[in-house]
Image 1: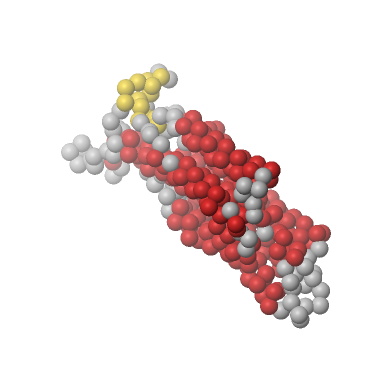
Image 2: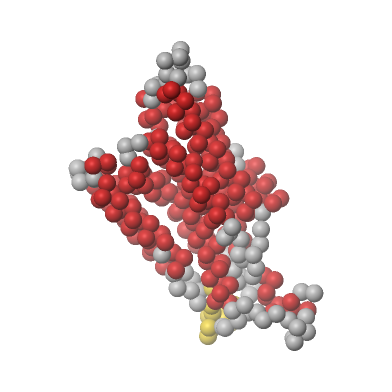
Length: 317
């Protein structure tokens, strides 16, 4: 029996709408974190120098551009991720995407390390190019799969606010490379190899656990008499603050010597990084409230959901 078909005395007590919407918002914030990981695909310039200058590689500019093109092709051909999403759901697609990202970045990291060890034995700089392009295609493909999953899931979860939700997620995808550049300045500079290693580990250590939080359908539905109050403006305000910090850091690093070289000005760079991470960590804690919608207008706060709406607000794949 469905909860709505049970006699009143046997039906489970409905979960408060506030709690359900809080869990749905947590799912959205997890999706935002996955977008930040997936968006590192646009940070190719952060480690491309080691492909060009590393002993044993010494790729030409044209060869480095070929690797970047392979990365982009990985993103373009993300239709397979859509098929996986339709067949197995968001979490499976995200996990597969994170594994592809990790495999691609770690393979490039290993290739760079091995090239340096055998630099005296290599006859030409183009020997590893085909493999590097394959590895770049892998993490580009993984990025596309993960983004496809979180965008599709969020549009389903927030039908009444799908434009705001999708737009905010795309904002995180857009600023991801700037966050990655700040992380490099604060934590890894000048070692671009360590950055590659971090890019390979992060999808597994951070992205895969976040995937477990994705999939809680909110009650923000046009067909429901209960809806989540709009958190989007507050979330955009937090995101705008993140963009301001990232922009100031970029300008200071480009126009002054206050932050460069990164390794000798690590405390200042670390302060900027902590500020950005603190703002991002504030997103799951944004205040929410559940309101009842009557005749297209919000009325008094509603304490719980009716039993017949319970099937529409649950964890879904």
